[in-house]
Length: 88
Image (cartoon, rainbow, N blue to C red; front, side, top):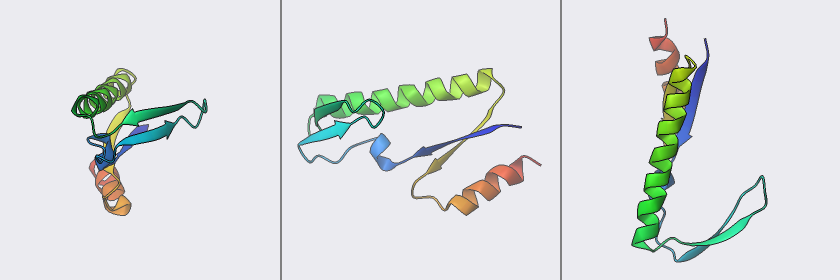
């Protein structure tokens, strides 16, 4: 069996409104200054992350991969026990 665990944080839903923030892609070194206080940016941030989650879920489902979501605030041991306990 294969299990894909997606780790999410509260920042996947909403960034703190702290003005312009420089984001850097660790793979390409691309840097972008993004307006975290902008309502339209916040909306697009949420929509993008939700769309990525759906794409991930659909990909996993298509390939027979069991999925689980863990939040960074969760206790990892408890979440893993729930995941593996339900697979018996």
